[in-house]
Amino acid sequence: MTTYEEELFEIYDDEEALFTEDERIAYKDSTHDIVSKVGYLIGVPKYRFEDGRYRLKLDLYETLDKNKTARIVRNLCIVRASIERNFGRINDMMRKEFKSIFNMPDLVPQDALNQLEFDGVGLRLRANAKLGEYIIEINRLIRDRINNCKSIFPVWLNWDYVRDIFNMKNGLTEAGIKEAANVYFSHLECYPYGIYINWVPQQCGNILYNDKKFVTLMYQWHNDYFTDYSKVSDASSFVKSSVYEFIEDADQVVMAVDCENSDPYRLCATLKGLDADILSKIKKIMLFDDIHTVDAWRILESHTKIPVEHIMTERVMATKSLVDIEMTAMTCREHYRNLVDSFIIVSSDSDYWGLISTLPDAKFLVMIEREKCGPDMKAALANSGIFYCYLDDFYTGDGEDLKKNALFNELFRSLDKAINLNAKQMLNDALTATRIEMPVSEKKQFYAKYIKNMKLVIDDDGNVSLELNIK
Image (cartoon, rainbow, N blue to C red; front, side, top):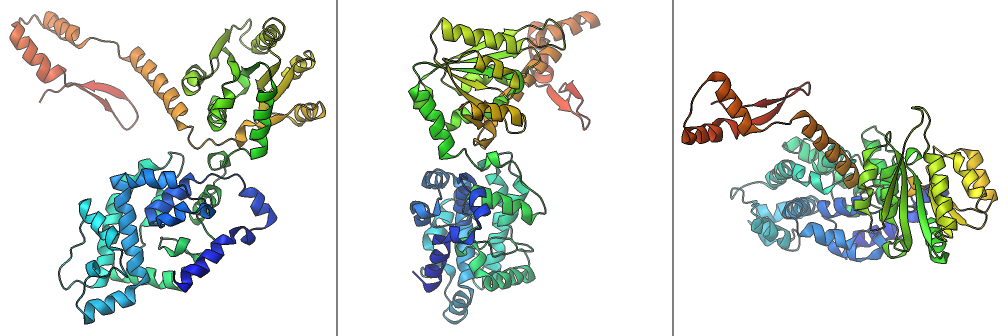
């Protein structure tokens, strides 16, 4: 290991020493999925993933290493970083000893070059090509291929910001690569693990320390602000342990959800973020709903193994919901008739304090949303020794499936309602209206050529129409 690498390890080993107390709290309980993916793509060595001090996830490394698209970008970045770090020595050997980057194993990783060849990406420039031309070619290949890695990252993350990290500014020109090299060597200690990326280097420690730090900084580099920290952090170990303890101490647990005053996506993320074996002790989830709540509640059961009972209430008046009354009645029934001793209430509505106070023998845990629950309700819960936690604190970064499923279900319903026709009957009706007689064989050919291949066309204003293939 070189002296520089030893110094780099010392910097990153003492990473938390760089933080103020407020920063230490802010970065606590962060996830490490985004930084692991970025780390893999830019070329962080595998042994850094294997060393738990750096919090990079080895399972994500191994998954991405099986992905040809990701593997190509990684190896291109490795070769580019190696050339940047050793440019002078490589350049001298090319000029004086007539060597190429393909026979300098101490300076350019040959396994990266070989893997690129195997994956169909060659760097075979003309025999007298200058070293700078190799960097330009690598930059071109990265620019052409980095968008193929977009699907690796969640849709909530601004892809343009991520892509910029890989694309060297003015990297297809000789002046651009010289400027990048000057910046890189002037601030080598600022680059993550000493690896080249495209950014304005700052003294802020290891930018790949965790997702919360990296994403926050990345948005700041683009004069933007990232605030949805539930996507890059998870509830604390104290919160999770308290939930587990509540469930394990109970004889029977039922979760009662006020669908009007809860977020289905946050609840789904919370359930996904808790231990499935412990959650299996929950007898059922009762969803108290009415016609005004969203469709996502109907597909919650596909994202949890806990039995779901969907209780739909009617409205006596359009402005008055009966969800709170129904939820109170059903909870009392579960307690007195079915002997359920413990309830997890999911609602930010203060109306349920009446329910809690009328069942003194039952135990309660309440899940609320930070901005929706007032201070009086929180104080009442705390003063009564009832534990509450925030749904907002649980990791939501991988909760996009529920949202996509809800959207797709609604889109399918809209399509079924808007487009309800039979193409064969449509042709028969057209033949009748035009009084055209057509033999069966000709009719089949006409149908196959012009109607079966009709397509949906959407204009710039979102207007949808069906278009026949009449060419």
